[in-house]
Image 1 (tube, one colour):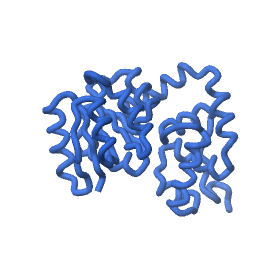
Image 2: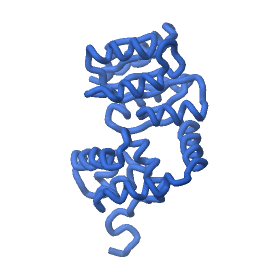
Image 3: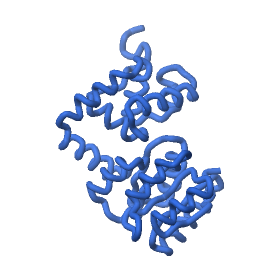
Image 4: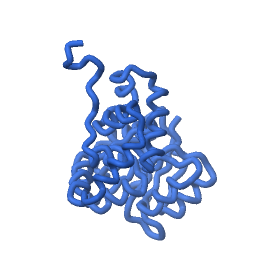
Length: 226
């Protein structure tokens, strides 16, 4: 059961999201909060796996709340939901540690899927948000390419292979199939990759890989005649 927290200053939005998630037997909405401060209080007293987080709220906005929640000893995964498709929100949300970014008019089935995806340690971005994020990184490249290459240099060859596939959008199961390893081994590699790159989630790791020009390695024997 994925224990979920809904954070939004609009009570009707909270109720609507709760109704959407209630239809999935694998998700339980365990709490609702009207702002970031209330979300922090709730997360400190109960176990939360995923938080659906609004951006613009009184007292503490979603960006600051995401950063604080991700700093907890057992941090929840964060999916940011907003009506505002703006570059700065996407960039700041991912930098704060969010693993998902969706618009509130996203199809309800996609919101449910996002909860499952990020609960498994994956990332899920609205296509427009993903494009904006990548464009922003390309525009501000500078010395970040050198920094990304240096950090990736800390990885083992196998971890580099995993990172290349991760950056290409592959799930843990897909990476395991391509590289011929157990999915649990892939999860261990991903944890070490995040620590080595000093990032908080797969989205940030993927951006480091793109900065460094890392491309996924082909499957063993792919196109080589072996």
